[in-house]
Amino acid sequence: MDWKDQINLEKLPRHIAVIMDGNGRWAKQHGKPRVFGHRNGVKAVRETTEAAAELGVDFLTLYAFSTENWNRPRIEVNALMTLLVETLRNELDTLNKNNIRLRAIGDVSQLPSRTHKALVEGIENTQNNTRMTLILALNYSAKWEIVEASRRLAQKVAQGQLEVTQIDESVFADALSTAGVPDPELLIRSSGETRLSNFLLWQLAYAEFHFTPIFWPEFRKEHLYKAIVDYQNRERRFGKISEQI
Image (cartoon, rainbow, N blue to C red; front, side, top):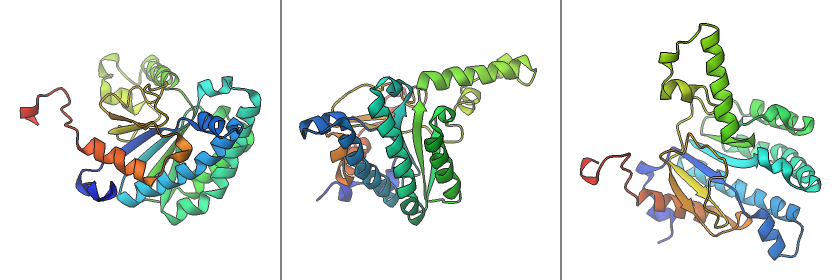
């Protein structure tokens, strides 16, 4: 029996988040520049997205580019931005064929104009799709997101649109860039690293974490299925004890 056959479709996580890690190390193992790894990671993105949609997952968030990634060598950053443009345009037909809607979170206004244009085109051309929502975290930082949400709420208070006493977890969540999207129940990180790297710090408060040693360019549908089976075999208590579940 393979991993897919072990999945209980009645207990799927509605939202899966993925930290796509290991492109550079995979390329180094193959004696290639880091960009070679990023390019080969596109197939993993396609397989993961299609597999999640086929199963019935409602939301898939991929950590594509963090605010800290700007500190990488300029040649790698430029190559990543070019690859994003190519991928967004090349995968548009696949997204529409699979009825997948594209969204983005992060400070996308600071992306290079060509990258920003391709992203906006992808979002607009898939906005009526309903099967699954694919969210790309681009120029994203969880700390930035939380600070921005705090500023928006502070501004509303200053303008008399909101009372300080009205601010609770729900109001704060609605000020985040993921407003209207359920928190991820499952986080997957490839490459063997076991940290969050400034990703969805608020939203992942009660997520189950699945860390795999597989480098991202080698990540395939079976690895996603295995992560979901692992998730389904866990007891999620949310502060309660087993007898209360």
